[in-house]
Length: 242
Image 1 (cartoon, helix red, strand yellow):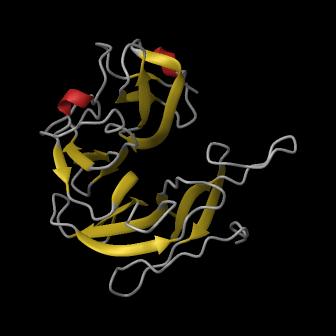
Image 2 (cartoon, rainbow, N blue to C red):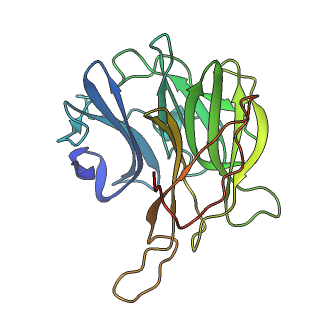
Image 3 (cartoon, rainbow, N blue to C red):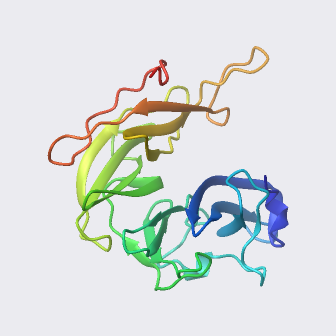
């Protein structure tokens, strides 16, 4: 689909936490990358005519979309990871990301340049792995949360009536993933139903048990209450049967 070292500054073995978004018949693949020359991460974007690729780097000057020096109050090499992109009802694309703190910016209509300053977005208990989406008139940010006394990460969320805030913390919607410290969400609507997709660490290989970096994709049904809040999601081993 795409080698990470197709980006000239990136290593050949450091890419993760991607999301593909369609706009205007093109598919934009946002991804976290490792620098070759420094202990930092960057966020970049590739483009394709098909969701299955092949993808090529979209920014022709060879520079990343987001770097550490663009991120406010960034003091850690993991600040710029886990991008999520949402296109609003008026066609405006937004990108959010972060580890430790959540950041957000507007994208230009071309999907490959920022169109606003990068802002830190207060998110209670935020750890990493944000996923941004909209349902009806309400914006949702689902993310891995690392609250005091809560280990490993669990999934929490906040909502807002305006994408630029203020955001209201709504609490946890799932427990920790099986056999893994991290958990990373996706929330999608398909054929009228909503789904919660995540990873756990239960992938066994050649008799070796799963673990934090031996991950399996999992999915559960997601349901909303009448007020727009998300019902708690039990993590099962059942998959999607219907």
